[in-house]
Length: 104
Image 1 (cartoon, one colour):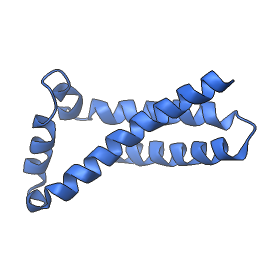
Image 2: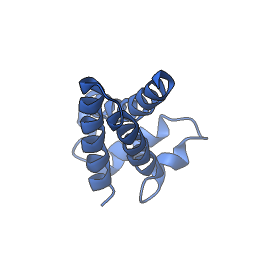
Image 3: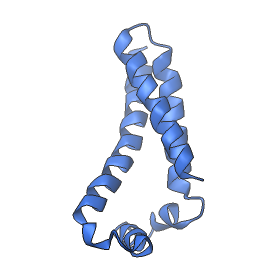
Image 4: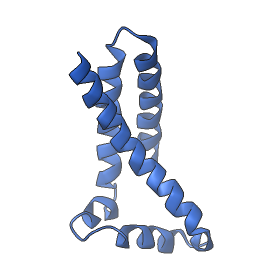
């Protein structure tokens, strides 16, 4: 049971790290806000060449991975008896929906 909780939290943290990374990058490069294409291009270039295809497609494969990470972690956390994993699961479902909305 604890191993499942740790695994669910790692999935949640991975998806959250991607979202936070985007917000920090966007804030640090506010001068590119008027040109969304240049902002996206600059964001993709900062990753290693191996990871760049995850961020460059339409729909973006990294966003699909985040939806899966949040959904799986949310389902795993929802099965726990305590209240805090259920609250974390609720935020995971909200973030999954948010990323799903970004795919449109």
